[in-house]
Amino acid sequence: MHVVSFTRSTPDTAAKVWVNEEGKVTWGDVATVVNPWDEYSLEEAIVQAKRCAGEATVIAIGPDINDDALKHSIAMGITNALRIDEPKADIRDSLVWSALAAGAIKKLGNVELVVFGKESVDVATDQHSYQLARRLGWTMLSYVSNIIALDPDTGTIRVEQMLEQGKRVLSARLPAVITVMKGINEPRYPNFLGIRKAAKAQIPVWSAANLGIALPVAATTVVAYHNPPVRDVATEIIPGKDSAEKAAILAERLFEEKVL
Amino acid sequence: MSVYVWIETYAGRANPSSWEALAAAAKLAENLGSDVTALVFGENARTIATEAGHFGATNAYICNDEAVNEYRLEAYAQLMTDLVKQHQPAFVLAVASSRGRELLASSAVDTESGLIADATDLRLDKRRIVATRPAYAGKVSMEMTSNSTTTYITVRGRAFQAPPRDANATVSLAEIQTVLTMNDITVEAESFTDAADDVNLTDAAIIVSGGRGMANNPKQVPSDQDTVDPNVWKAKDGFENTLRPLAAVLGAAVGASRAAVDAGYIPYEHQVGQTGKVVNPDLYIACGISGAIQHQAGMRGSKIIVAINKDAEAPIFKLARYGIVGDLYDVVPALTAALQRKLGS
Ligand SMILES: Cc1cc2nc3c(=O)[nH]c(=O)nc-3n(C[C@H](O)[C@H](O)[C@H](O)COP(=O)(O)OP(=O)(O)OC[C@H]3O[C@@H](n4cnc5c(N)ncnc54)[C@H](O)[C@@H]3O)c2cc1C
Ligand SMILES: Nc1ncnc2c1ncn2[C@@H]1O[C@H](COP(=O)(O)O)[C@@H](O)[C@H]1O
Image (cartoon, rainbow over all chains, first blue to last red; front, side):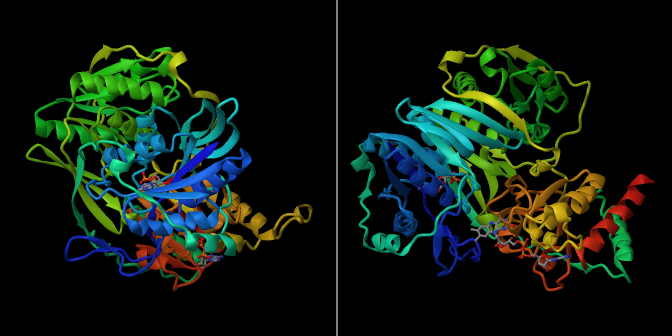
């Protein structure tokens, strides 16, 4: 059983992020972290690979800033890491991204399960996993809150899926691509041995040519990034001699605002 | 070059957020001199398509075969893909719900088309789409364009206003057949458990949220409950008997901070923020929430924010239009009573 997880580096969630004079997104020299949603997918990949006596590989697509996320993954316990870097590809377009991702999965050859986090905290598109599954022609199971059973021998997987309307139990055939939710597990913290292993790890980098694929033309392009208008709120701290009076005034204000 | 809108349905009813997608589509169609076609698959497709007509669709493709009776990604994506390949619409829109996102992303790859997720504004610049979408937890906004024949776009819930309903408007229906049979579908749905009514945060017009402060409930833990963590008991009781009554008076959904979720006060479905749900209500009432940057990431888009916190220095007050400095266990019941009086009359 070979389990693959995709991840990348994202700016720390507490970092100040803005668009600079050149129109580029920046967060100064604040460090990046592994995409927080991926802590769950990486943990799940480690757990499931171990349960099936298999191996786990993590892949990032993009420039070397992503090595931080890959090293974090190794420190957590992922066995192999790999980065795809193709300077000619605009990976912000997910058609291009998924072509590279599918190329990598095919080249690895024996993968039966791909685990994604629900989304990237920065772009939050929640679209990469589906496009990979579709390119591979594999089963797609999204928003998984629990893997109830995974059996590589019978090639089956049973999961609980969490949607706006409630929870569903789904069973399906492998190979499959899944996205996992927070709460599916308790992601581990890297331990000393893991961190040492990560520090020493050499991460292979593959290009589109290495994957033997032709890149599709990007369909979408980013025209511009903007700093959104500052949210200019005048806060009114409601006065009053006690809670009852304050509450009555607030209720009045909310009616005036016409939000009730 | 029609503009397609996938109408999301659930248990034979439309997700009303889909009408917002119809509004976004109508604007594009008008600029293109084209029309809006609803795609309605599954149980009650005909009735729902008629309803879509009341909200601006002029045409509809409907399908209600066994394979699409319930939502199934494989069957739905195949139907959508076939329609797009055949008719090459300029756009395919849907609301950016869980299913809207996976369905449009899947079909976009099938047709090698551009995909723009979670748009909050759409305009045409000489027939070229320019979509605005938030990124970096709303700290940055980005403009995207697409050069493919068909562009798939999911629109953020509550970013576009649903059109007024016109019960006299008619829609021309065309019935289509599925291409996949049940045998082609590898995913089997075994069971379903409905979510509680008050967790549908993304569609909610009003949200009442609780944080770690919920644990400071003055109530005594009953003696038969002494095996549970007293903070957990107090916070759960607070969500149930202090926050929910306020939510009930307002018809609001119940949200929570990650601190409250991680401490086991309330299930994850309720979490608002960067690793929870992003919400855009008209009114967001934060009770016992400090307003950490990751929480703000999920609720900054709310129209009116109210903060109830005993710490006058809490960062949430910087975001709030109205604040009450005080103990939520005094303020929330008083607010519930005050609103009940006003809404009752
Ligand atoms: C990667 C990452 C992702 C994250 N994602 C999220 C996310 O999605 N959502 C999220 O919310 N957080 C998220 N966080 C956590 C976030 O940083 C904060 O820790 C969290 O939001 C704090 O929750 P809180 O405001 O309930 O608790 P606290 O910060 O402890 O605040 C509690 C507040 O309650 C007030 N209070 C206490 N008692 C009372 C009372 N009786 N009456 C009135 N007020 C009272 C206090 O004054 C205080 O302001 C994330 C963090 C990280 C690192
Ligand atoms: N360039 C990338 N390399 C590896 N994984 C990625 C990349 N972009 C997105 N992902 C993963 O795709 C999942 C869904 O993210 P998204 O569709 O970007 O919101 C997350 O687990 C991300 O880490």
